Image 1 (cartoon, one colour):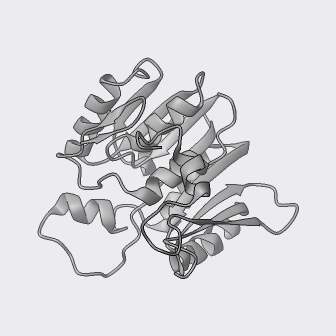
Image 2 (cartoon, one colour):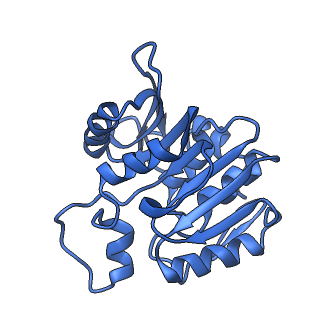
Length: 232
């Protein structure tokens, strides 16, 4: 169980647990002030609930393929203050149909041809067999408004692959956040915002989670997660 300031995430039935980088995505992505928002592969419902806290008038759909995770997310949403604005839907995003969204969020599975777990739910959450990048981008292009934004979290090498696929489909990165454990470590996650129109190279920002001692959080990280973390 992971308690945030305004909601609680139970995660005993979901393969994808709460992680720091996903929290950074939920806090950093530009969500606007309302409208329609889609969370692809919601897992526990974390990103959908963070988005609901940040955008008091947004209507949010959260799609999840795994039965156990769908049930977990449904319960987490039902127990939250945002249950009237967040709807959890079980199904494949490739066949999901809805009116276009203003914002789409995704923390997708990204492992390809890696060692598998005996637990199929873990494989579904971590490996991209069920949602290859090409199918993810096709779904985003189909479901995103022309003026909308798509926000995604990936390791740097996988983000490079996704950018190539996205640009062929007409989506272009306009803003990126490079995340490090601390200033002495390499970038281990990249968060990117994509739009259909590109006017300039993407704006690139940096975030270190910890100070160089590896123990204390940086002030930038504390400010970003302050609305959510109980200890900030």
